[in-house]
Image 1: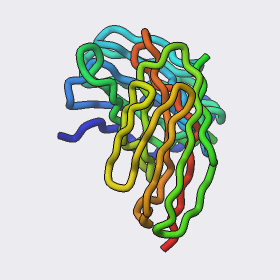
Image 2: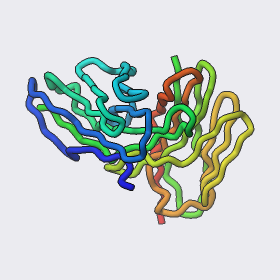
Image 3: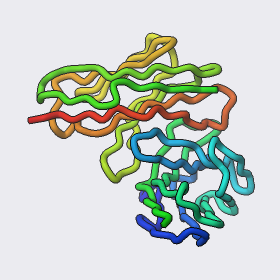
Image 4: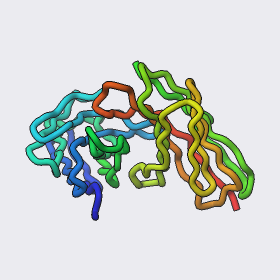
Length: 114
Length: 111
């Protein structure tokens, strides 16, 4: 199994540009998450989803949007990129209700906004 | 608000020199405490979950313990390949299983 995959691995954006970070999991997990990690800091939750069609805000949602149309995919949208969004973005998934609580992480997307 | 504080921020050990990493937490009802390992440029890799005070788990040279206020990750006779950042996270009861992370301890084991 591939687990959690993320694309792209690296991206440079100009201020005001938009992009979508892709996340796919093949473990049939119900719960999916987006985190950002700034240098020397822990991961902060941006958005999460407990199933297809259900999403909710985390600790730092401003400037981002998400959708969950399938169990497998959970894309993160940046509409108007700002330098403050320069970070490493990690997607994670966990089984959810009835399963273990362990979250499994993707390899990350390193985004720079200039 | 759930909070996690890890110490020290960085730790350098000689190969074979045992030590412990600390994770102090405050949470509104602990569902679980998680330890992850993160290598440079990679995503966090799951190590352990602890659910109740007094619980211990081991994996190779690593042993995690839990009290009502903190968790320790003990590293016995470390090797250079144990060098990584170790992240601690808590999960509150009644949540959608979100994790609140500490900022990590960067461990370097010198040969």
